[in-house]
Image 1 (cartoon, rainbow, N blue to C red):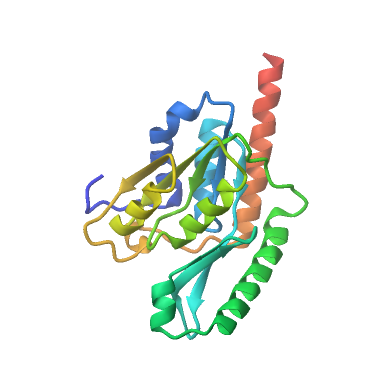
Image 2: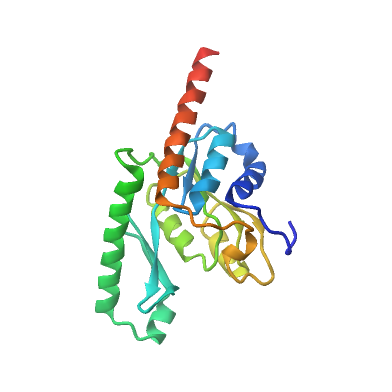
Length: 228
């Protein structure tokens, strides 16, 4: 794809990424992990086309107080924290305020995990090849935090798959995983949303429904294989 290309929507991006991931179809150890919410429609397409399990990995951006869109780090449900220490020092954010914000975000993540996953237990990641999916990388902080947490589960391999990324984020993530598959690295990134014609917000309800559909499709695949 060239620097002027836009994706129609997340589903199209998932289809295009699947073509780059097709060699993993015959790998029985592959799991697709998506970062909610925007990564889930893409992860669903990949998991469905490759006939692989789909799960979520929850990470939440740490926004600067009063400027929430400005990320100073990210946290995950399993306790991993990644911080932009330089930014925090420049903005003179105290340790007390930072600790309070981290605790608040982790509590929110635990609640969201229950909401989105329901009674479904997380997939076992140890010894697995993880295809880790999001709808794009701006700073890379959220993805880097997810990678940090996933590594604690001792996977066999981590493959990051995203439609679009800034050069800075891509350079950061490539150092942390076995492989990065990215379809578009614009010279002028601006934001993830710029590179999609349809970038409507994915809802919690859509995430829940896609996880259930992925589970049904996988069961159908298993039943078909048994009957052959």
